[in-house]
Structure formats: structure tokens, C-alpha cells
Length: 320
Length: 261
Image 1 (cartoon, chains in turn purple, red):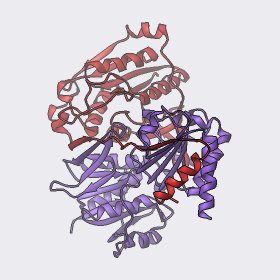
Image 2 (cartoon, rainbow over the protein chains, first blue to last red; image 1 turned 90 degrees about the horizontal axis):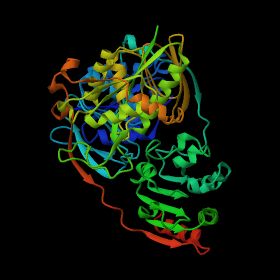
Image 3 (cartoon, chains in turn orange, green; image 1 turned 45 degrees about the vertical axis):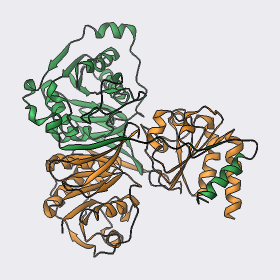
Image 4 (cartoon, each protein chain N blue to C red; image 1 turned 30 degrees about the horizontal axis):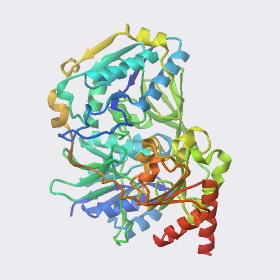
């Protein structure tokens, strides 16, 4: 059967959820073969196998951690040469897209980024994407070479599909460009204990109406009552109230959770671009004319400093 | 020796406008006014700051696009870039990201460079792959998605803020840099800058000037094909209540009814 390469996004062998979603999509096209770079291949292989990976091609070398992007491209290219896949799937992270781009060029392949769905087609996999701030949905395919496709988080369910997940060593020769950009130091982000923004099932966001960094504790309390990630509008980030890594919108993260709760966010195009594919949208805003209310399944016109704490308390009571 | 900086920019339909696809499923560039992509303003700004810090530097701003795309070049020149290159050819219509990177790479080599600076993504296609593609084609280090950048002693250094970590990067020139919207607010062109820009040279090139064949670019040369594009149906109107003191509880009721609680 045709094989599909799946690039594994992991932290020391702990596989991140979007990779498992990719395995679900890969099984629609062929047999998933995972590519694991860096430490922890054996631990990862167990999880990858449980979700459908027939083989896990593994390589570990200091170059993967010490130099930017290119060593991983060299490895993925070696994997493509060894497997002759019908498609290569990569998680749509910032780094994932860069790896995929360079790989596509080397393979002489077209590239599709930020797919939100993938299905088999007569002429190769067909990818669904959002365009123009999610005002449009397009379906595209790669018409030249082995399709290289990056897929956004939350695009498919994680499904158990037991397979062997046999670990095989991948031989990688690094090219001259591999050591071009040195990662001199790396400062890990402090964990907030909350889910990753792009992967979360529920996102609670705050905007201009939150009116100050100190008031974001209200947003965080609501998020914690629901086990949600915290987002922020560009206005809130530009004002310095919340970190840029939490920005939802055109120039920040694009999220597609089951539930999105917008608090004190007017809903300008810049913000809508990043959240309007959410399944259920809820908003609290004191301005009844705010464009965010055009998107909502449920909206409360009111002062967020009254409504949000009351909501948080109610959720806590009901959850006991 | 002079530091040769090339800034690659894109002329895009205004993201606040009502953007559509044309009949051939390419981006409709007529229905909505165009402008220099906001994310590329950050690239121009950082190039200007790098040039200011260097003993001697020259900034060339480069774009590939139709006649109107000159507006984007004028904006960059009025901000302070020294000269411009406009690659314009009817055969470019419908070129995909891979093809665009080919044309840009040829034009950058034509200009000569020590440093290429780009934005993080365009605001229309939003793929964010052109910087990596350019580095691959030019065979130079990619120092990308920087929120802070510095060039000195033939080296580029910068901070890349990722989801899980913040990384300090370093590479030797020649190199390619892309900067994020966190790299620093772009300056507004001054009146003097706008006047001066009118006298700055804009070189026009077509595909043959770059030694490229029409078959390598355009819709026909694209390695991806859009099968269809549908407008997302408007979301069905939801329930909107005015808070009369019970708004939070009403919202909780809704979340219970949707099984979120």
C-alpha cells in the first residue's frame, strides 16, 4: 500500500496532539510512516503506533537542536528518498511550514499550507483551506511532484488505530547549509499549565475592553474554570497587557476550537481572521453594535467585569 | 564596503476590504484597493535600522506584481529605501509561492546582496513560506521570524520567539532574514521622504531579463491547483441578551445546553 510520511512534532519524545491528528488524515490516503527526529524515538513510537504509524523512521543528532530548520529538511528529504511516499504531511507550526517549504522545493513538489481537512482524490489528496480571513473555503491539490501539505491543529480527531510502529534508523547526511544558522541559546517558555492555544478545545480571549494587564486575571479565571487556553486580541497585545504568543488573529494564532469566548473584543477583521472557524462562538461586550455579535451563537451585551466573574462562579458551582 | 540589502515586499489587496477570488480562482486584485502588505512594512523598517547602524549601506526594495504594485515600492522608497526593482510580466499572473520564490531569487541575484530582508508572511496568501524558499534557492542561511535583529561584523543575530521557546540565532552574511510584527513599529513616510521617493530609481524587469521562461511561472507553471473556492456561509444569527444582572448565569445556561459544562 502507498505510504504517507508524517513529520512528528514532539518534545523529547512526548508527541504533540497535532501529529496524532495528522496520522488520522494520513490513513485516509495510505499507510502512515512517521519521521521522528531528535531524542525519545522509542517512547514516541509506542504512541505513534497506537495511532496508525506502521513504521517510525528515527534519527538523532546534535544538529537538530543546534541549528535552525535545515538539518530537519535534510532528514525529511532522506526519509522521502527511502520511502517514496505519495504525500508528506507536516504540522502547520511556524517551523513546520518552513521545513515543508524547503522540502517541497528539493522534491520538486508543490506545497499547500494550513489545510483544515484532507481527503483522498483521483489526482492525489485534496486539501481544504480557509482564505481571506476565513471568508472563503477553498479546496486545492498539489499538481506537481509528491504533495507536501501542512495541516493546522484541530483539523481531525485523534483516533486509535493500532499498528506496529516499528522503529527503523534513518541515515541522514547533513548538507553544507545545515549548519548555516546556529541556535546560540534557547530559553523555554514558562509553562502556564493551560492547554496550548492552537490545540485547545476551548479558548477564552480578552480584548481592549479588559482595560489593563492586571484585569486579565478575570479572563484567566474563566479559562481555568473551563480548562481552556487564554487568547488576546491585537489591541490587548499591542497595549502590552498580554504576551504576543497568545495573540489570536491575522498576525497571531489562528484557532479553531469547539468553543471560543470573546470578552471585550469588538471583532475587527484582524481578529475574526484568527477565530471565525471556531465551532461555537460566544461574546461578552458592552457595545451592542460590536461586529463580534454578527458571529456569535450566544452573546451578552453587558459589562464584562460583571458578566465574566458571574459566569466563572456559576461554572464552578455547577462543576461542584 | 557597502552593505547591500534587498527587501522583498508584496503589493496586496487591502485586508480590511471585501476580498474575493477572480473567475480563474486567483486572488482578485481589482475589486479591492491594493497597498504595501502591512507585514512587509516591518521588513522595510528593520532594513532601514540595519542600514543606519552600518557604516555604508544601500537598500533595494523589490516586488513582483502588476503595474499597480509600484505603489508598494513608492511607499518603501518614501520610508527611506534607496532604489527599487519591479518585476512585471503578464505571464506572471497566477504564479504560486514556489514560482514567486523563483522570480524573487533571480531578481535578488540580479541586484546583488549581502542581506535579504522579508516580512513573516503576506496578508493575502498568508502562507509564510517564501522566506524559507528564498533561503533554499539562494543557498544562504535563513534567520527567520525574528522579533529582534542586528547586523554587525559580517554576522546577523536575532531573537526568534517560538511557541515553546525563545531562541537566539546567529549566521554569517550573506543571509536571509524575516521579521515579525513584533520587531518594532514601522515609521511613517515624512513629507520630505515622499518627495524624495519620486526621484529614486525604479528598475523594471520582465521574465526574459531574469532568464526565466513563461512556462516556469504563472497559473500554468503552478505546482498547486485550486479546485474550488466557496464563500463561507454567514453564521446563523445567534441569541443575544442584554445583561440585566443575570447575564453570566444566562451564559452558563447556554454553555450547559451545548454540553460545554
